[in-house]
Length: 536
Image 1: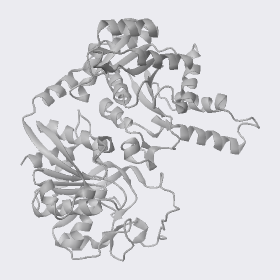
Image 2: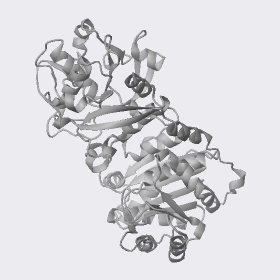
Image 3: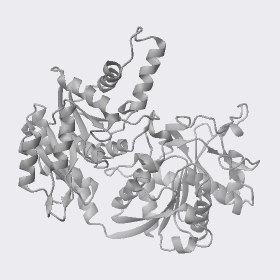
């Protein structure tokens, strides 16, 4: 088994996650058994309680882990599902160490970063492996950050073990100074020096740049950073992130990496044909649709990263370029809803939490329902569709969710509020928020002769969830009478999973997050169907 460690320097947001995923794609395309894992230096136990503006979306795995959005890149590129054990943070590491200390596991020792914290990191790196050929570890943050030091020390110790085969890839940024008219390599040199101060010599340097990197710059980086010239790999901007594996292969990254790991690349032929076909589909798109996404984190696209990609995947399958019109729900109201949404071929209301922006989302749902515009509600989007229909069609004017307001007309609330025999769960400002939701993959049963059944073409599905509140089954008959049916339910019939309209061209709300399972090489059927309806 071989380890590949990927670090970043100079600046954050260089794209280490996509780089890690692209490298794994290249290795998988050579028939290696590959796995990618993430080491994050922040002190949160997981990103579940972090604002999307702070850290982008929270990605959820099948087994119920709330993880960094980079695991979404890993899954989309490798087409294999990640696990809870593929992501860990400094917060989780320190939590584990302190729990062991309380139990007396360290036999009275003084607990220190070295060796106790670094040993915990090494234990994670070496744990839960299953005969993979190559395991890739992306280290979050930027070299030089104080939070990253324990991870770098753990990596140094692992690489110092002669029984462990490893390679270290360091990703840096090459800025262009227009006043000087040249690329500058000094930031990269300083970044590598930070690594050397931690006792680590990189094997490969990947250079992110918005301009082609000339041979002189590559020679300078090679000389001052003590790596061979063919191990300095340009990482230039691509038209599509799905072009990245091909670009890296063009510059020889996969071959150089395999040589560092003592493989002969000639014995492992590369097959990128599925990705070449995908890129050809992207280049030959015939149509364009505009999708209005009404949310409250629209100023940062990474807040809805998986959603953005899933819409693109659905477009590729329909030979359609998807243009997303990001609409801030807080600025949308009954007076401007028509102007903001009039050019949209479809409207999507994504998941979220809290009261902020709810009024604007409900107005968007009402507009799509009344004007026969394809509507897709995800998680909170489905719950708000239930509230909008209850208020305006069922005439339950006080219909609401107990997440927003305590009311006797909760059409959405905690499941324990209406399931007989359960003690009602009380939540207040002191209740824990992290890790307390319905998380991970759950089964749902679909009703035959419904739109959702025609989309999935099967009566049982497994989809990923991340929510605390559920739709109240008390009102199901009244919804049916108005032409809205709950066409997907949990196996026990207690929890609604899918809402659809009998009388609308495409009006579907789902309690789960289908975007988390969409892949460029296998788009999610719901997004394919949604984009197809928007084309009409």
